[in-house]
Figure 1 (cartoon, one colour):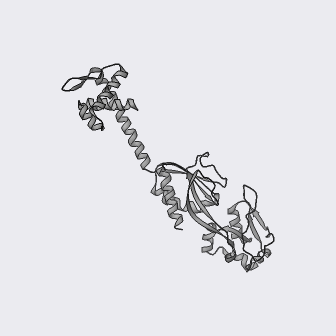
Figure 2: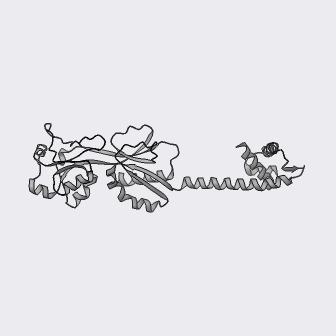
Figure 3: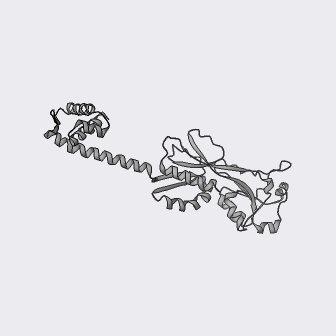
Length: 294
């Protein structure tokens, strides 16, 4: 860095032919400019500037060196400008990992985001595996439930709750359960987690603990489970964001809502750092704005 400051002092002195003017441009004293030039000459073993009581001028060696140094400083200035522009504009690849089912929430928002930030290249990983944000090279991840990563920064996204739903055709054949205990007489469709092989527990508030619910159908694919419910195969226990569209258009109906008290929270997490890249900042702000507003 001392070499660069000496080169800058030499170039300004060569351009202005004055240590005073060069120092004024660099924000240092004329004496500091002179000392910088002298250190440069001592390192190179050649005289770069001729000095007199009235003025300074370039030697032949100094003229050759000035042309090269001028180009070097110009390249450094361009590189600095490019980096400042890079840090100011949202661009580049952004790697995002989310739970597999979250595509239902994320995909409808991406057209607007990509139109607003066309220089950001999204790489989406829909995966129920709990990824290591840093080791796996992700810029940001979506997670639900309790947070345990102390080295990550978190922002709250949308909350959700579970519903018990079935198709109108199913209710037409079997009637609707009126109380939690009625579930024991119905076809129940269950989801099995990939990671631990456990069944998703139905959190139902009943006056007394219920025996195990019927396992009419069990699958480890959430889309298959929704499809089974739509085809009238039984009752399913599903997050509201996956079935809201089907509830609105009447393909599914929810029951026992006052007895289901099970919800959760989605979060955005990313590695903590003092400088947040623009591509990450706009993605986080965009999702929080859209999803916190519902």
